Amino acid sequence: MSTPRSRNASKTRADILAAARARFGSEGYQATTMRAVAADVGVDPALINRYFGSKQELFAEAAEFTLDLPDLETVPADDVADALLARFFTIWEQDSTFLALLRAAMTSETAADTMRQVFATQVGPALAAVTPDHPAQRAGLMGAFVIGLATTRSVLANPAVADLSRDELARFARPVIRQILQGPV
Image (cartoon, rainbow, N blue to C red; front, side, top):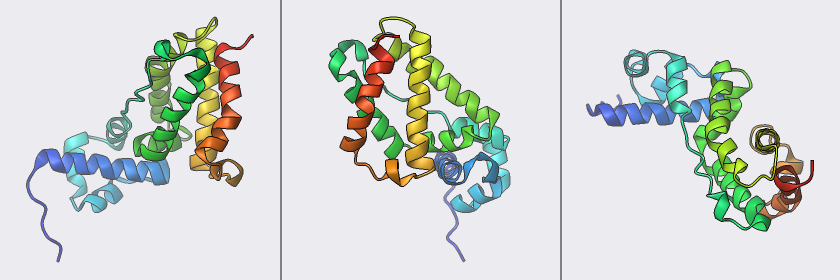
């Protein structure tokens, strides 16, 4: 018989969100069930409904995250790619919320919309500060490149990319990022 959980609503809510992030990240939106999340935490599925409402609402809250991009206006132009890559590596390797969102965005319009919002409110403005022209297009292309790398590395686990060290991947990606953000169109 398992030990009963203490009655701490905020901790239980946080545990449910952590379990949901892990499930959404490993299984994607469609395959994740409220019952599985509840089992991971050791609570009744009805409690998840009480705290979050629906699976869609649970996902929306679990998928909220901040990229915390560096202030690129203070970064020398030649170092922008490295500053972005350092942050992207941290997100890809340590942020289960991003991985959950990335996986789910392939099959869920809610997740795709959340991803678009992250790019519109966080990535676009940060990148616009360092582009000479066409900021929306450059930010969009940067998003496509970064999402492509993250998907190939973390979701598909293609060995040709997934097995590269940070330094090796940075050597390949650095000139592409420079071209996208600051090169001639």
